[in-house]
Image (cartoon, rainbow, N blue to C red; front, top):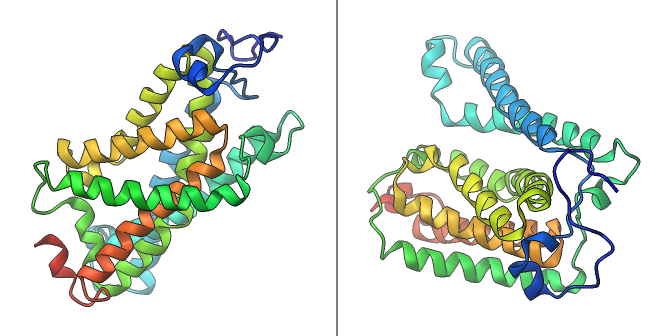
Length: 272
């Protein structure tokens, strides 16, 4: 069977392979998504375009209806504008992902290798908590800036709650679908498992770079969790397992921030 991407693909007639072989033999990655690398680029371009468009629309709407005395630039800088804009953009992107994944007649879950892990979901929840605690411990050993651009989202309790909910729902879902559902299998088909895992984790870290002030310490932490999530996807063939782990990871950080800040009432404590 020839790949519709024009990229080399692994043979589907080879003998069954073990997890260790999957990791060590890139040529046997066994990934054959129905979309191409160009489709992945289109999803990425649409995401950027929709975020820009929604930021513009939400800013104009908020300035006219809620903050008429503020300049358009002052409104655009508000953290909530960014969150609301991303929410709208992500919903559009999810719809586009659905059309890309199902255009050849497959169900969406089957196409993106959703594969719900059943009772093993509890193990992935625990893994997310463990990774979060371990990486937060590592963060104390790395040079970390006193403040980061993402801290502006924690200026008020309302902002903290909105970001927490967003970070435990739509954000991890879309990120896992894009990186582990769409990008990883295309890279694995062309480059093999090892390179696909590293490149996917690198891209995951790159999109968070601006939020982290491009400081190498926090970016390294994000790269490591991205690496973990992509290995889970490579070994289990399950995007759902990564989503569960990702939600648990973000949720653990949110719980720690909630505790340290006294229920989001003393947000100044998180930068101390």
